Image (cartoon, chains in turn brown, cyan):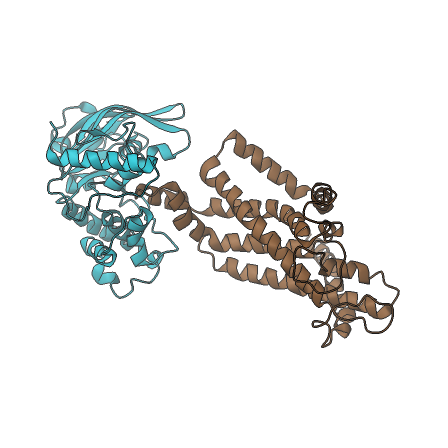
Length: 270
Length: 287
């Protein structure tokens, strides 16, 4: 039995090891000085450029998505744990959050496409719309993870604060949130990491661009789309660059995960 | 028969209620000068429920000012629930509610215009398990009551130090006020929680089995503290431990199945109880 389980474990590790192996083998070669400092040219001849605009785009879009999703997500979970308790409405919200977690990510892109893009709200394809799509994707993840963490905050602390004569909102801001903070940050970072690697919600929201821009009101380049486009290129150097971009993305996500783990280890509860 | 102190207290509760409903800045009369002469609590026909469960069944009882009143009784007799009704913490449990009156002097704290946070500032509570805030230092834990209630105190440091001295914790922690409160021992944590409660300068302190999680030495220390505190506060203590009631309480009440069986001077309850059930309980024949 033990041998069987060990074999299954090793089998599960195979694709993981292979992915890392191929990423390093095919990606490392293309990473040079100009990889992080120049933008993709998209031309069929001459220099292919780097992936600077893609990195900038990914970080900016995910940052905006985080700014939208984390406060709302934590807010929803606070409502559920601190006010809603076991009410009908809370159960309904929890159910919808669960459903949203299971929605395929391309649906968020489609939803933004029909609601914000074909309606021409504030321009055509723009980066902030992609951020909204990613925020919708992150929202249920943040809400679920925050709810779990908030439920771990001992109710004895809430009681202690209430018994001192504190109004409930101060109990939340001065006691519940600070106690849960490491866990909230961890959950949010995991959602950020998830959003960082998503391609589908970007496909028909962010448009296509290769040039560097810092404006979220324009079309933007992103790492997942850069990889998606480059890997289909007939030029071998561009395909190689796609691997390097893939490696960059994986390292970014890995970094976020490591930070999340580090913070969760400092947690004071559970 | 309102004494001047009473009407003062009444104004304070009412004005806080009115102000908070108007969403204006709260301004309270300065409370640093502690009123001389404590305040009594009266319950009149107090009932408490958890959903369908009728946990407290009509209690009329007086907790005398500047005295320690102990409530004893077997597990599940409603003594904790009753005490939690006195500062309206009972209603924080989903589905729980109370009816009847609890009077602080003459004011019904369940009255319509009374602000529940003001009630809790005047009637503090110490819980069974020490519950210092894990994110806060020793100093911040004691200051928490003032900060959480939005009390503007210029002499915050002084009030924290005074509270720590009052619970006899000062010498043990004065060199590490900035280290976490949860780093203290269980007994120290409980005294820290008592310091946190008295830093808000309440009139009444409710203690819900405050020593049940402590070792005998720490228990003794807290009992001595209770004896000192009664000079300034009216104290209600729920306890499982009859020896503890005998040691600290001026009067003792025996509760059974949500009802008050008997309430009298502690020595009488333990030596010549009037009710047969009380006698059987204090002599260890049941419970």
